[in-house]
Amino acid sequence: MLLLTDFQSRHLHLPNRIVMAPMTRLRSHRDGSPTADVVTYYTQRARAGLIITEGIWPHPSGQSEAWVPGLSTGAHVDAWRRVTEGVHAAGGRIFAQLMHGGRLGHPLARIDGTVPAGPSAVPTGDTVHLLDGGKAPAPEPRAMTGAEIVQAVEYYADAAANALAAGFDGVEIHGANSYLVHQFLADNTNLRTDEYGGTLAGRMRFALEVTDAVAAVVGSRRVGIRLSPGNPQFGMREADPAPLYRALVAELDRRDLAYLHLTDNDRYPALADLRPRWSGTLIANVGENRERTSPAAAESQLAAARADLVSFGRAFIANPDLVRRIERDHPLADLRAEGLYGRNAVGYTDYPEYEPGIGRVA
Ligand SMILES: Cc1cc2nc3c(=O)[nH]c(=O)nc-3n(C[C@H](O)[C@H](O)[C@H](O)COP(=O)(O)O)c2cc1C
Image (tube, rainbow, N blue to C red; front, side):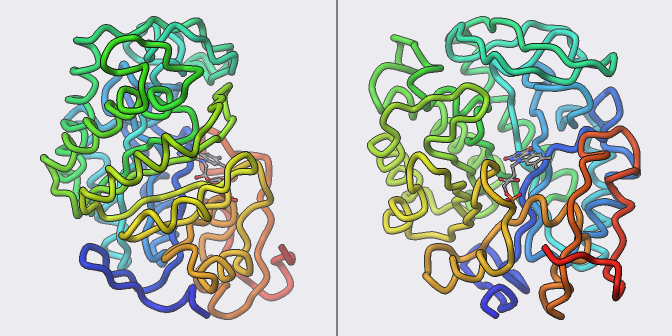
């Protein structure tokens, strides 16, 4: 199987092509430090060719929901170091996903209590988890000032430096799924008329500035970026994704990054359209609005040369031993709804490894 072959690029050396996709699980302490369960969870999955963590806020003003982890303090660095040490001791590799919520957030969901701000004052209409355990719609955001945008770029760079200090092998910039970078890219959430909006170059500016700032701190070979062109999640609407993403991918291609992580969706065939425009390593993901990625579907992406690596999300939650199950052709366990966003080990670290007769066919 191609999935089980090793992968060598100038920047990545992986024993297989199975990537664990970033997945928010809301298991951090209130201050954003990952708990001991988080160490167990990622260590259990260390056979992945590469683990990409759940989204991590670079600064409290980018916290999208309660219990999402952060990477802005010494306490965060110390707590994440336990995660990276666990994964490395088990033979794995792990990148930190830097995820700024932008407009997606709530004062009662974040430890600094601030009103969320994005490119423009366009509400998402979506609900977020609050610190009191409830959920509420995200309020109308403030439009960021120019100075706040410059500062946000610095927050990503600072968090990237913290990621290296915590022992991560690299960082993934979350430019997908409606988070801040995506909000700058999309025409319905970016109504700015300054240099961060308007033209295609204007809408791409924030993504490129973040990429350059992060690469300047950790080196481009340690930087990946995730994009989800046309993804309608959380009220995003991109009228015409192709010109913007073609231009963006061409710009990113000059930057010698570790990888581009693309999620496909039904509105725009991102993998087919952008693969030929990207000369580096490409990680494919099918996107959340479809059936979960199956080994057969992933294998066919590799066989068709549409990607170098494939990321698995939901299958990795239910199958900590996913790589071994693929190696041995064992059936995959199903995801339970319980504990997807829980606050303890239930539905998190309690999925068993394969035992004959227990796993159900995916
Ligand atoms: C519980 C859950 C949390 C997620 N959180 C994130 C996240 O923090 N960052 C991100 O880029 N994508 C996130 N995603 C999207 C996944 O990375 C992935 O794209 C999606 O699950 C589709 O892949 P799959 O079919 O293999 O599950 C999340 C998905 C799930 C199911």
